[in-house]
Length: 349
Image (spheres, rainbow, N blue to C red):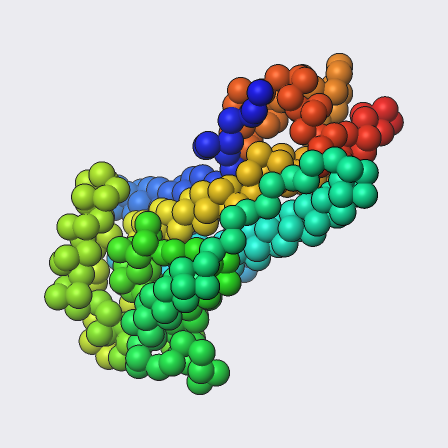
């Protein structure tokens, strides 16, 4: 009997999923607050009344802002909200890549340790991932490098240390795929859209929210029209990202919608990496990562537990999306990955 991991999350994916959901709630709450403020002012509520209410709630530090032109101020506030959100989205992607790569390395090390023990004991070795042929690896590397060059706003060599800072996030993603010998074909169609958002993020962070030549080029509708249709076809979403066309020096107009769509886009990359990692890890590796994440976290997450399995199975189903769980299989797998004794010891305390 095997457990079903066909839809399972790595701990990295579960953490990213939580970020995506919490980020959406937070961003939309801020957008609602700005819209409510605008509505309140339009209805004739005085600035003094708003000030009194805000101070009673300890809702602002320092003095109230100058609202001589409150419409312009609210517009700028909305763009600042979107820009800050966009930077969080790509920061979350950085964290995800670090965690998923660390997870793969951790399981590789544990698997080696397990198989050394099993070999000495005369037991059957755990299966290791199928090794691709040199030709297949070369093909993947060649295609991924082609994509990396396309993402570089000046067409520079992706291995060059002089690459553009503005495209380094996409290059990092592509290089991660290349290190793992993974193809990008499932998410390749998203790269032009990814590039647009990462360039906006770079401008927000490094050019005072003004358009650079690279963003100006990437934002032109001629580069987007085909990708928008592909997005609709492949995702089934009726609200695809749509570009704002910029010329050099234009102030950015990043809305909360842009940040939400960017988070949805980045999540698609995370889901693809999670899927490919799942194929490498198998049920042993996926359970190992879930257990280490669980055991290294706060004890109140899995305690109290009336036995070794009930609370564990609840967490594996709800958070990591394992299914077809049963006690005998769980114990057997925990013994095979050399975590059964450690799990028993934790619950005993």
